[in-house]
Length: 478
Image 1: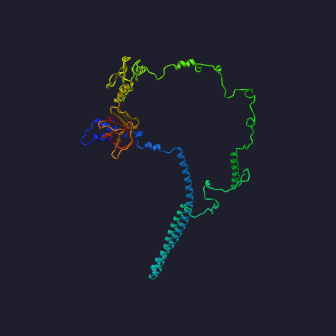
Image 2: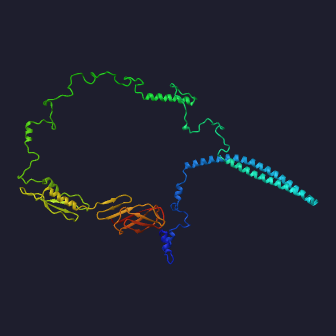
């Protein structure tokens, strides 16, 4: 039993398909059944983000305090508005009472009209006049109702108007002498006090600032003074008085050697590093051969040869490992024949003799040996290794073997396809590539398929659009 993707389930249940028992079981395991009373939090989309975005306790308390403050302002405003609305309602009730009274009169007049109609048709004009009066009164009532509605609307608008509807100015509320600037932007005027004086509680700011100005000015002058303003004496700071000397303080008075003087040879004590040289020793040293002398025709012809110590150094030494990984080892036999061997299956340089018998001409000089070694080095130079060891990097070996890897962010188009560019291009499309999801879900992930390859990039298609990152690794020749 396993959880399958939607695409896989749809493929099993297409028209003409015959799903197996195992496929039906996988289909049921891929969904949550209603009998399962508990759904994991991780499977509820957006739940974790909603829980993480809830208020912290301090923000909730502050919001509650603001709510209570606004509620208090609203209750105060509502109470004032209710009182005004009650006054308006009282006026409306009086109008309605008057309306009822007039309606009663109208009803009475209508009754009289009916009586008059039964008496004489001549009274029709009077009845018509009464009807006109009734109509005029009704129009007056309608007019009063309209005015009441207009008055109520005007009161509501006036109550909600916070833009100083009565045009109250600063002089009317006692602020005519206050400058319209912030506290930190005020510019008080004052005159420096003539002398240092203590501040007094309740005095004017102009006087206090004048005293402060005098104090600051005196302090600056005192700090910048270098003329011993406190009259400190040498005794107070533990110093010696001026004009003193050190007679009999450090050493007794006497005659001492001057700063420039000499000593005789007998007064000098010799040691291993400091000795006198006699004239005989100097003569013996000067009779030795010069450092640039030679032995022409004595040992061998004059030339540039390797020293015996240098030949000994060549025996058995190994050269630096080259780019191909091969190690060249020189071997010198007792006759001075220099041969080479390597562990990379490469061609060795030709053997040469680097030492001639005593009294004969040398066939190979030091310069010739250096030329041979230079040729060996130059003939085995190869392309340098390249690499970039980062999250999206590569490693290219000398024989062209190239391995690359990456961890890209989601950048899918509307069809769920994303293009990934290689850090280093392959020579062709015969490379192999593998992808895997970078998902926090343990039982679900988004599958990705390689849908297009080129030497410098590839395209990956996801079975559904999401924001998950993924890993990829490719191996080939580059």
